[in-house]
Image (cartoon, rainbow, N blue to C red; front, top):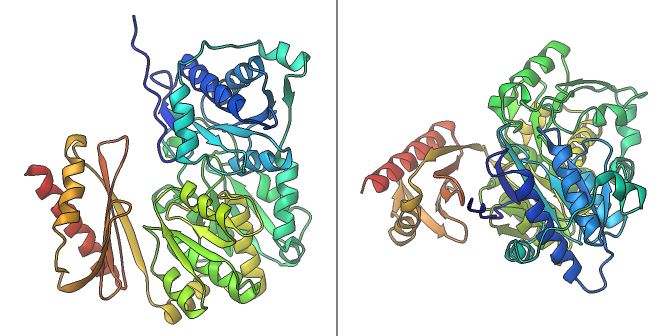
Length: 477
């Protein structure tokens, strides 16, 4: 008898290799557990949306989930095409659903697919909900109905959530002002489900918008659909060729962004996050609410908050922790290093479409080039050079590794005294000059992530190298 795959939810849902552990049967097992969890909720509307991205077989996996939900008395909403994760999440609030499932592996390599769970509050399922679903796997037999039968009897509804999501975004953004600006914009959907959405929102306006890589390609043109510098060469070239003011990218499921400036160069998300915060404060006059950042985010956020008397919360990596703060209190903006940003007045979820439009609003209002805004920001709040490296590291040694870093912190890092150590998510050493070095382990892969930020590129690179040699030394011990 074949052993069943153990279903384990990570930072952002359950992911696996297609046909290896992300199989039809395993997806049904998780769907049954999800249905059992939703059916245990008292007073919840027994209806949910199941979205999907452009990955191989995503629409088929989504149909399987719908079939299981429908057989368990939960009405399933199924989009007629691949749609962005934020549109699926917004539908939870808009249609007052008990939750959502998004079939996506986000920015992972093409051979992966995943199962993102969204809760009744229209945001990422918190660890407690994920544990509830995990604990219900294989507790009850899988019930399923035919998809066409489900549609016929009204237990499955074909529903496109994009229009409602676009309407919600339009309430936040000054789209009229953007449409009146003569901006040249290149959008890169990275073969993901952002498609031509941004271009459609700005058609018949003074803006000239060109979209690249908008078609479906389950192999993502040979790259991972992660909007970071090394994957955005095509966008950099397109921006230079078009002489555009900005290049806007979204990841595979369009909940995160990546940016190329007016010079055709990739711009760090750390700077983008800082710019957006300043835009909200200075251009939009939004000066109330908590600012939330992940532990691996730039110190520029701290400085901007201090200058404008705003409270700041630093949380563990994973947007679900930012979402938690957004549900607890009034949050002005929440951002993470990987390009996920959430805004006040919207769902407690990252939204790549909204974040990209907010940047266009900033360019429109300031009438300045992106490179100029970045230069002025760093002149006022200090230079920021940031990078991270992922290195292979034995799974069996990672606990010892983090423990050694925690219990034996150095007095200084490359001649600069240590100011503090933070250990609520991995270990982060912060120096007296505000430069820092952080170590985190992957929960599922034999990988450690090393992050660093400093006021010079040279020090940042030296800190990363120092971190790498420290990790190698501990791995060999």
